[in-house]
Image (cartoon, rainbow, N blue to C red):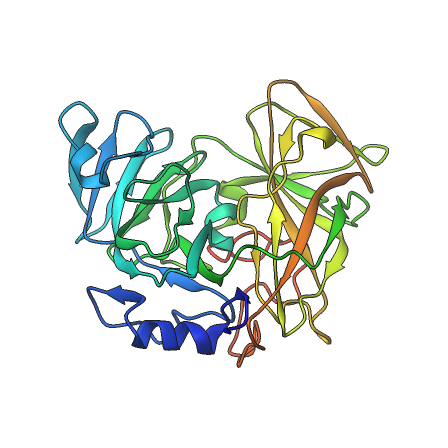
Length: 334
């Protein structure tokens, strides 16, 4: 009987060879991560009136005149604007066996620029889930919340994990917010900033997009609807035979969301590259005090079907060994 758990890189490559995941273009050399596969945008986008789940229908069948406002050609690059909802067919599609299902999440850089993206499959009754045995296309719902973004075909905003069998959490650990840092303890996004080209790395002055935050008496007040970047107090270490995911919402800890891009691949934080989790925080409904050391979420670990062949950061990473860090689109804060 095949081992149950999250498929690592070698198993993902085998899955691609078997056609479980196929693509309408050549695979990119760095598309396979230690326990996930980067997904790429196709050549067109649909501007929607509202988000939706297809339920009994195929996604394409729902794209009629009532739902779609207009179609956008991405081939030369196009701006997806703040406050709008878009649907983009992905280059990848699925043909999963009956014992394998998929889970999706925004990539780290996507979450850190406050772009809300979710995966949709035909007949889906839940976002970010590809059912066992699913055969069909994959779609990305994209809603930039603070910064408008420029995208092209092939842009990678989300990632997919494949899992054999039901999730099998091995353990979980709480993480807390660090408001004791010297210098800024966090950053608050500026509204009405310029467009961010998702393919341009290190190209933007962070001061045009972010305000640094101080912690008065070890506290920060979160304004409703504002977007913040903080760091965890704890280092995060993911062993070579495990993967982890942050639970994005824990209502019992307060009315705020602490993470949008929740996947942590095997090898993250392995010595000598100890690193923190970066928290993508949005307060809900009411102003909310957060204090240094306050619990803000949970990290859930689960096994891989086998050890990853290459660990996170072995071939280079913008976030291995990170502390408080903005997305890789920005130059270092000075």
